Amino acid sequence: MDYILRATAAGEKIRAFAIRSTELVEYARSRHNTSPVATAALGRLLSGGAMMGVMMKGDDMLTLIMKGDGPIGAVTVTADANGNVKGYVNNPLVLIPTNYAGKLDVGAAIGYGTLTVIKDLGLKEPYVSQTPLGTSEVAEDLTYYFAKSEQTPSAVALGVLMNKDNTVAQAGGFIVQLMPGAGDDLIEKLEAKLAAIKPVTEMMEEGMGPEEILDYILGDMDLEILDKTPTQFLCGCSKEHIARGLIALGKQELQSMIDDGESITVKCHFCNTDYTYSVDELKELLQFARIKSASKKVGILGDDDAVNDFLDQADDAGSNDAE
Ligand SMILES: [Zn+2]
Image (cartoon, rainbow, N blue to C red; front, side, top):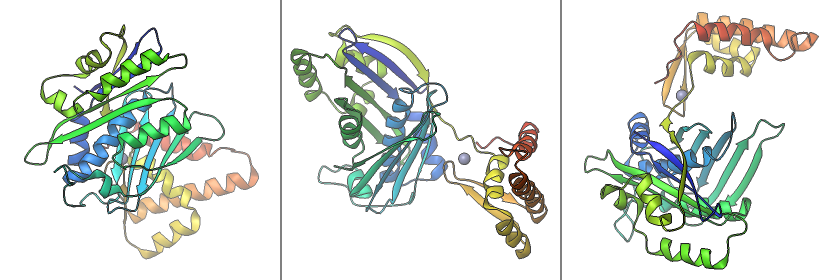
């Protein structure tokens, strides 16, 4: 089972997270049919994103987008505060030579660009931060983000190890952060520990889980595990959910689809599921686009209430299992 541990150490001067994400990254690989380097890129960002997700609360949503000039295009991950995470890469089939160390070259696959972090905390405007990508190896880029945008010195390690048949053997990682008030001696001790540490996937291959990894790093610094959150790849999409997006395209766009006289297929990028809408269904959606636009005009229904009511009923009627 995949899960995330949240912990503190050194009397709350350090906070830490560790994840085992082998199953969710393998699920992402099979869902998106990613090449090994794309699996590594997506798997690392999914693992980091899932841990950053549980740093939030309630209905908060986090989106991470690594967009560079490399052949993969962009890597996009969305996570909630409850361990649910989903993501995709623009070009899942990208193949590039391994790097000088014989490792999957995630940095070259992503290339130079920016990391965009969007936090929807239920406020009027989401929090958006952009930082330049450094190595584009994902962990270092998240470390830079924490330092630059959150003023939190952090050590981030993320790893995905592939089997010979290109399925995922191990995936996981950790985030260790210094809280305000951490003294120089504590910082030196932690730095020395982290400098000597093996790659995460190597530790996992030796049978170490998140508990053992945190214990290895922080075991002599009053480590306290606070909680354990199951984590999974979960896309909440459904035919009704995608329909809302089609309605939002507006009357004219829907009418022109109907005039084409053919069913249309819309793909959910996050989970690579196709949803097909027949001409009759498009006509139904057009009705709702009309209601929506009319209600907007007279201002009585305010916030798409009629459309939402209908779609909620349709949701309840089933057919919303996207997996
Ligand atoms: Zn989906």
